[in-house]
Length: 81
Image (tube, rainbow, N blue to C red; front, top):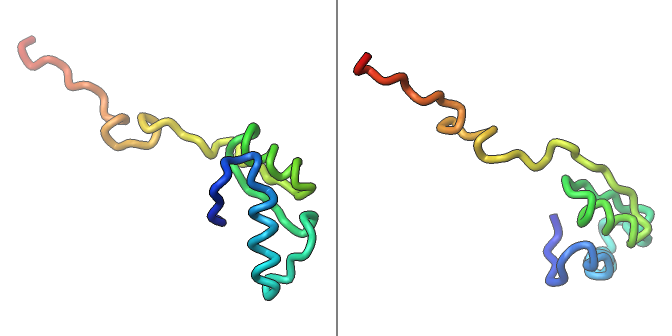
């Protein structure tokens, strides 16, 4: 994950600037970058706009109630029966 001040998908130039400042990475062109993300309209679009590769993680965004221990507990039946 690279820091950027411009919101996605418009931060491609900032991402490439990072690689220009760090030549030890060996990245000199956008087609040497793969953007991994869970949002089509930000992560994948940014990669497309940059001329980079993208990997879309379809199930990357998960609702809290699907991951929370509390969300998975069924309400207790009334004990006044």
